[in-house]
Image (cartoon, rainbow, N blue to C red; front, side, top):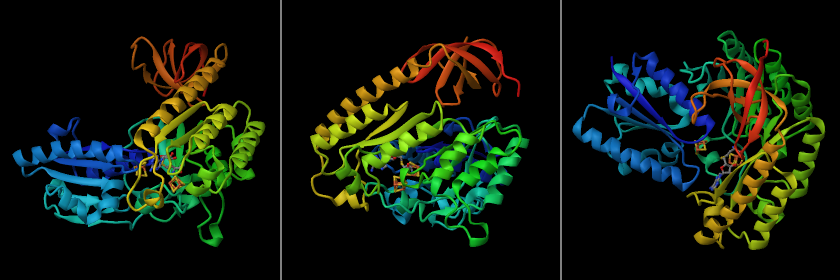
Length: 440
Ligand code: SAH
Ligand code: SF4
Ligand code: F3S
């Protein structure tokens, strides 16, 4: 049997696309190889959100090219967002690549790679055509699953390459989503994460007879028996309407956790970024969320060094972080992407200044996250078990409803829901001991 290996870069959407890529390759009779060296078909599912993933990919593809020189029959396929950004150019950059495909053409993969890895259509690039939602899927986790609700993004954030590589927003039909969730529940899945680039604008582009909105989708998924936990990512602050907030508050299985990308605390920079909200509106939304959803965990994304960002703008970001007190935050140095509006803006911030700002921001973010986690000490949290601890095999690892990683003593199997008394905390993890198995 011929075997494949998929290397995945980027976000959860890409991780889920890789499950579809694997499902497609298995549907034509390939098996999975544990390491790339044992594979006949090497797939790279790429990301191009910042320069760093591009650089990492170049190193991986260097190795793949060396392998191809030794073994010309090996098939090299490059998919994902970098492939979509480069299109046909990828064959000039990396002449040993056989197949390149954008996120919209995963359905063609079987045809292009060919049955058993033979009959490869060389030098072929495919672009957006299909929604991958119906494809076979090789799930990585037994009790947790991603569910794609939309593809693409209609926003025009000045720094972002995603609309260029993932296309216009297209919502998946509600009946198809609920059918997938029902099948997952029947298969033993208890936690789902609904995925969309702009997940809470889902539904607006649907045909008038099935038009609905994201809050209704949360309620429909909540009604599926067997689903204990529902998460979603990423919502855009501009689309967080009251029905979504009340659905989170009222649906038992929707977790008390929202990842709400802020990007900047400066009104001027938010405007230049085309985020379409002000710091005041963001803060008002946070207040509304916290007033309606008790014990809410808030995460965010922040960019430092957007073109024109002054020391004063950056300090406004620090102030906003202090005011909101996020439970977690992903922090990024602005990275110019060719073809985006911001890449050609004047006043690009020098590298040293960007790095210095990131360091200052990370310090504040980590201090607050550690304080927020320390507030959990003494509480009992429901934990969904994911396996054994990565650092201590005597401990069990899982996540709370608020999406914090917990390592705890006790015995439990993957997929169990366990009550854990929290005894200590760091900025990223909690530590505790099991008090009981929660009946499900
Ligand atoms: N669709 C999602 C996520 C987009 S990418 C959303 O809008 O929430 C994830 C994060 O990467 C963004 O929230 C942003 O903080 C960051 N990002 C996107 N483009 C970037 C760039 N050019 N440079 C640095 N960070 C960027
Ligand atoms: Fe990019 Fe903005 Fe769309 Fe998110 S909402 S994917 S940051 S353009
Ligand atoms: Fe995700 Fe990277 Fe594409 S963040 S949408 S894989 S550019």
